[in-house]
Image 1 (cartoon, rainbow, N blue to C red):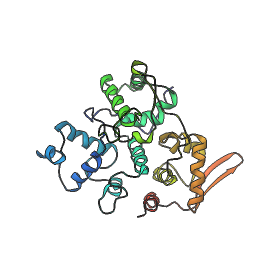
Image 2 (image 1 turned 135 degrees about the vertical axis):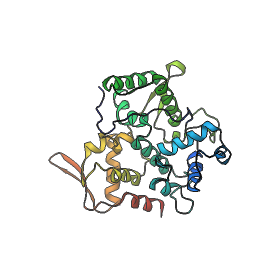
Image 3 (image 1 turned 90 degrees about the vertical axis):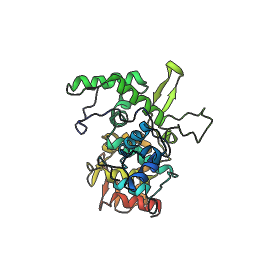
Image 4 (image 1 turned 120 degrees about the horizontal axis):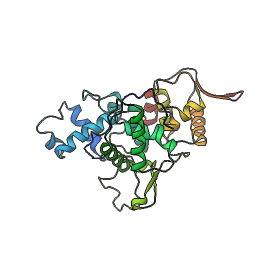
Length: 294
């Protein structure tokens, strides 16, 4: 079954020139744009210190992670994270920042594969590989005749996705610039080798996600009102359960921590109806201000 997703009407693939996002690209690209420079400038290759194709790839990832908008202007999230003077974590030293980037990548939908995999595909296929994902997207194309999906393009997207998240315990170089920027999150696991390699994203408790990050994503979601059912927090599009692959126990742990740590937020269970309730909703970024000590 393919989950019908009425909120994502346009699917976009490619744009990264087959380059996964490298560790320093986002900060380097943000600084470049913040200085008023243009990716089309002749000296962009020299200024950014990368090849020509990588320049367009950096621009792509800045948009995919919601660091810049479609006019190449830094977004609020981009400024809040990467600003040299007041940014939360310009050099991504706190794992919470990587979870926030993961959230933005999935929620933003600039590169469709991430929303498809975390919101839909992984819930249908416990174990998967490039071929099963391509077939899944082909089925989306069959039910949406207006979509013109290229199998090779989708396959390349999957390879980049895997490299972005895959944590290779056999890698000897921890500082390898080729390692995926989100590999530390250990969301994507593998089994088998070579042609038999399969990927899986299992729902888990994920104690390493700060409750402030989970609360930020709830407050940042325009579809959530002042009363939010537990099921919607676990299963809905761009919910904490979907994006962070949280199981019920893990989600309840985060909710418990949120209720203890933040006033005006309660969790009720009346007649079997479980809801997270807000008396007064704070601005999402005030939660991160507090977490990062700003």
